Length: 47
Length: 456
Image (tube, rainbow over all chains, first blue to last red; front, side, top):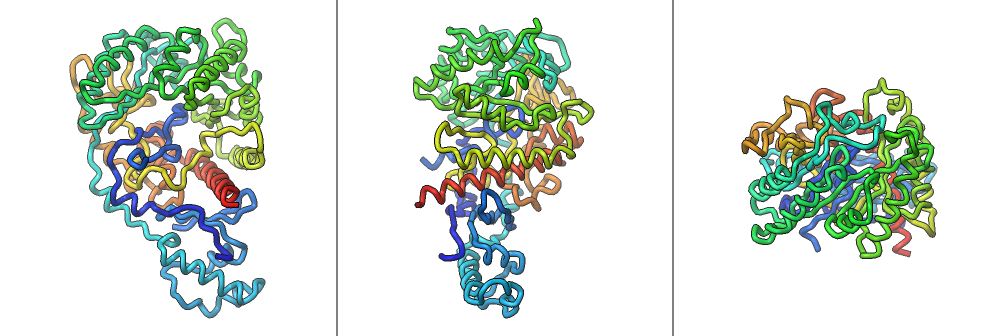
């Protein structure tokens, strides 16, 4: 494409259909816990 | 929902509901203000006139490419996730914040735990409560294999015997129950010594090391009991811990700063921590009562935004001494599934906090608030109603989240902050939302920058 560069797979909808297995880390969005905000997490079902 | 913004010289478009991220040229970027779903294959006749500063060929070409994205489902995707939120139920408890110490050997002015005691008496958790916490997690985690436990406080190193006993007990029984305990610890570092460093680096999958950056920043607000410099005590110990850790191939740690109104130039603190040899860095805005002199308020936002811009530029342009900044990390392809993103705060549902007396609360920030006490490890009580409430606290039950472009990255924010500062777990803390959106723009821009560089 000349006008657009797509940088990822846009897979959120597909992830919903097979998601929710619960293997990934629990998340905490609190500022005092730099450990596990959602954006920092990975899916643990996809290796 | 489409969000477009400019950062690092790129015209970036995030299609929130598909997670599609695109970089557009000026013509396509301007066109996005003029079109919406449903798109037709035929270009609207008035577009060339509305975009007269571009050639008709460019307008036609840009429209055709945007239409391709639309048909592929990565532009103007619909938000059809509410159906999943309607079915969300209580989860097994698989994560715990263990407040092994309600005491601290620092007196940081911004401490949400009232310098360690959480508004109660100063005390240390006995080892038997730690063992009961492990039993509770094994019993309550159903078929979840990976169990997380964070040693927290106050200062957890003040309860070192309890930390060691709890880990030892978990390791002795985890296999027979089919569990894998992942321990983490959040420490101010004052009591670190060789024995503790060796134990932490062996047993903890992640370590959060509290330091506020430059000496003057740290010592201004992280006060020792004897008036000496906290920075001077802590930094060599953190350097030793991180060196030992990385030598063993473990890269998971964060040197974590809190920034306040006193250091809105926090990029300098981040860079200072990098100069000290640390690569995994974090600087988080203080969340506190606006009346505090160090509080960040809405009036500080423009200054903070420009500081995030500066940090983003620094990271994009670095060719050596690179580092990770926690709030700018985002994985565009392998991130959590949409179901996970509906409920970003696990508190009170799959995550709980336990105080030194065995009282159970939804998370560390609720500790000491009687209204939110969920039970106690000693008498086996556990309030299912509070759990149900948090299970149903998600993007589509929180005020305003469904209409926010950042919803699938922030996932509704911190329930405790919402409760403490807005009076309702389902009413997001506005200042945190503003900061989250800005950080996400920087994170996406850095991801775009890296992706384009890698593709060359």
